[in-house]
Image (tube, rainbow, N blue to C red; front, side, top):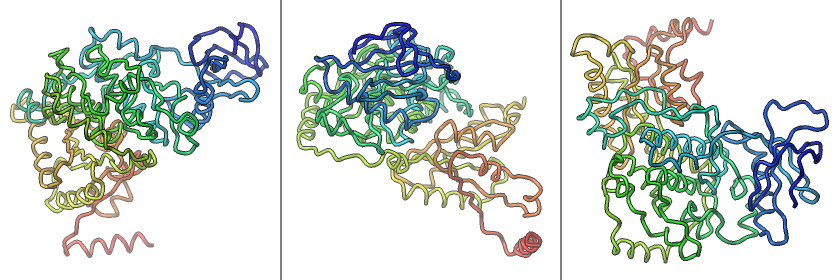
Amino acid sequence: MKLLEAGSTLDGFRIDSCLHSGGMAHIYRVSYADGRADPGFPMAMKVPRMASGDGAENIVGFEVECNILQALSGPHVPRFVAAGDLQRVPYLVMEYVQGRTLQYWVEQHAALDITTITSLGIGMAQAAQALHRQDAVHLDLKPDNLLLRSSAPVRTVAAGAQAYADSPMDAAADSGAVKDTADLAVPASPMLLLDFGLSFHAHYPDLLAEQLRKAVGSPAWIAPEQVVGVRGDLRSDIFAIGVMLYQLCTGHLPFGTPRTPAGLRQRLWVDPVPPRSYRPELPPWLQEVVMRCLEPEAARRYPSAAHLAFDLAHPAQVEVSARGRNTQPTSFWTHTKRWLKAAGMHYQPSPLVSEQISQVPIVMVALPYDNASDATLYSLREAAARSLGIRPGARLACVTVIPDNLSNSSVDAHSETSVQRRYLAWLHEWARTLNHPGQQTSCHVLESGNVAQALINYALGNHVHMIVMGAATHGLKTQRLMATVPIKVAMAAPCTVILVKQALPFAHLGEVGEDLAQLGT
């Protein structure tokens, strides 16, 4: 379709200017021309190219985007306004968001510090997680398709030594213990996902798989399973985020820009050059995160974008292996073995996206920092073990909240470092007894004067799926008069809350009976 001229109208929309003219579509700034009320945000119209030489993917991708954009909601996607008749004049009108794409930061890679890279990575992971929870996978994540609003500066991590620790034990040795807060290193505004023309939605027919029958995606960022035609796996987006993190760290593409099917297939068995070979000052924990995202087998990557965001937000908790410390390319013999394995590998269709997320939740256990009885700690341990035992791959976050003035004492024994170290050691010891081999576990000491709100903020910021905490142990009369911390959390938490109640001694059974009798009257 030829370019629309400024001032012309189409189905009640006035063309104000042409914003972009690309190989797949033309994009225009538009406004209402028929007197309709302003929607409260600027609008853009996307019109696919349909010249005789254009490929079928243009119109198929446009149809896919029309279907998917209408089904999505939330701050990470532009708001849908209208769509044109595919048989007459196809177009898509959506919210127009001004800002910089991630490409801007990729081009500034040499000047980027670790905290900025971390912040951008968290923004990407949170946007992908929000999309996956709606049963959709983007499948074309790249720097041009991620946008940060112009009014949204990047907020960096203020954790100092936390960003450079190799492991939780190294962090404790180097700086005592890192003060953990409910605030994460994220962009001040949600990162926006653009261009859903190659995306997959579990509730709609996959037109690209049905009609094109070939790998679709941008060659530099496409995941190995996409190369062989598997669509709908959320870990494909995690691979693409890993490619972009690699770019932000090094300024290089991990697999170059292959132009042939054989070049694309190499990522099924080849490891990229470790980022620290290009930039030795990169912390090993960050290389560990990036290289895990880029694993050829999807099962070896992060099981969800929430898990990726968690590690980026809590680098001191990342377990660094040889993958993170290595600075030498993978050996020829290792690549040969992977090539033989990849040649005989059969890729299976992915389960429903939301089911993949629910299979690997982040489980948070909130432990009281003071006056916790052995019975309470035992009951919480049993509840956590049951929750983790039926969900292989789940992550456990052990959290306690201490008063914000507890570590401000002038007495050295109660200094911030000593208090944090003591409670972190206690949490690690409690978690050690769970005895779940291979289980990802992290421990966090929060400081706040509002325990319930601190736990809720942590659950929100870290995409927690389930909270396990102790129920209030005082009488029912008191609970009727004032909301306890567990009740406040249960009312406002964004996820399932399991309240664990310990067995009461016989001496208190009579009091409970009286409370229940009074409640029934």
